[in-house]
Image (cartoon, rainbow, N blue to C red; front, side, top):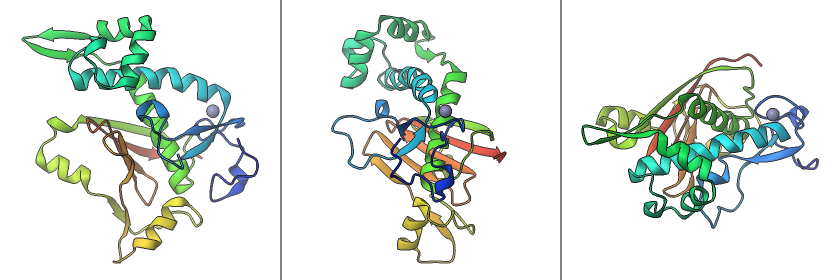
Length: 234
Ligand SMILES: [Zn+2]
């Protein structure tokens, strides 16, 4: 954590972990680097984070990232995975590799993957809370939320069109927040529109609603995710 940096629109929250509200000793990239490839984009987005969240989430994120690549490539054979980072992680971590292999099975010639849903939802909420904190200075560590996930290739045209549409509304994000500075540049009609942010082409993009109730993102141009904040308890 850099004491000279202002992470949120309001610097009273500067020392608060974006994920649990605890004391932030460190910074966390949003999204985490495991979802991106080298060379990493310049000016990676960061939020304040405590040591515990930083450590605990990274194990789950590694699992989720590797599993998404295995699902996308329809194989758990490390040698056949094209993405270098996942190939390297799986060949160095026998435990993770075996665990992922055990979650794939064939049913009537279709490859089925039994994902650890709780871990997926935890990681998706973490990503969403990070984006909300960074973009809208919205803190959600006690919020109730709902996670929806789809494979892009399985979405109907109607659902896909709706998903790809940026969020809009009539609520303006908090003064001084990153979202607001982007909205003011591109404002050309009465509705407040928060466009998609491309973090790395083909790897990760996200969109945050102006009223801080929804975040959607696409990982590896394969998994589409929407996290809805059901109640704001902070
Ligand atoms: Zn924390």
